[in-house]
Image (cartoon, rainbow, N blue to C red; front, side, top):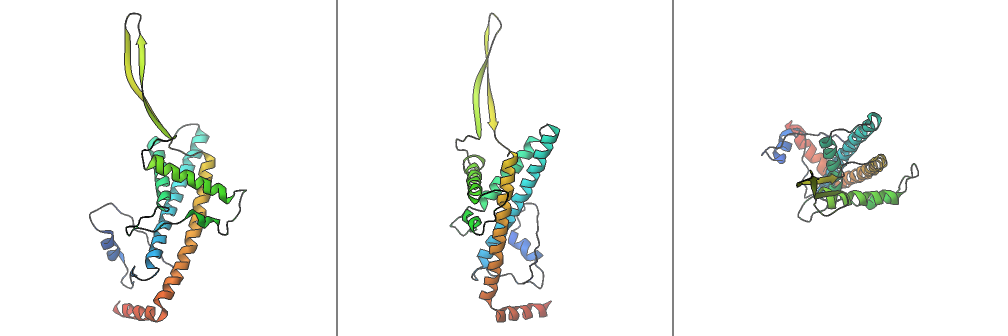
Length: 230
């Protein structure tokens, strides 16, 4: 079955995304009810794929900045790097985060073990270790304020003595890690690319299962009714 994708991005408004979806839906389209078996699972994997594609773009931007910094021997804008860094980690972590309250299903990092394509001497266990590193960054540093090795904020006192008077000034240092080195960026890119392939495979399998669940006769019946109204 041919696949057509449309992406709509906009500003945050009080308008429901469901209303936006219904307004953009083609007149010849049938919005699949999520109560049908495999429908929600398919929608969840589409959403996860969108997150992973976004992470890929964020990593690419960070890589461009890193190369530019190395060639120019100068630092780029701090806020831009921090935004790209934190969003890449949060977006990646979302794919593995599961809620029991009707939210999106998650994927398991174990999916990369199946038919793992050995490349450039990279081993699957190395990627899994890097995955745990990213999730650790997300859980203890980026999305939470746990004590971590990635940041420290410490007050200190600076003393000045002019020979007769001792003066003191309270100040502080804030040190935070908001960047990846070249090897980490490469690992992150390889890991995300591989996950995109695996989720695409799962999505395609779910499309086939959903089509089979609905049945050809029902699809034909629905299709003719909608087509005649257009």
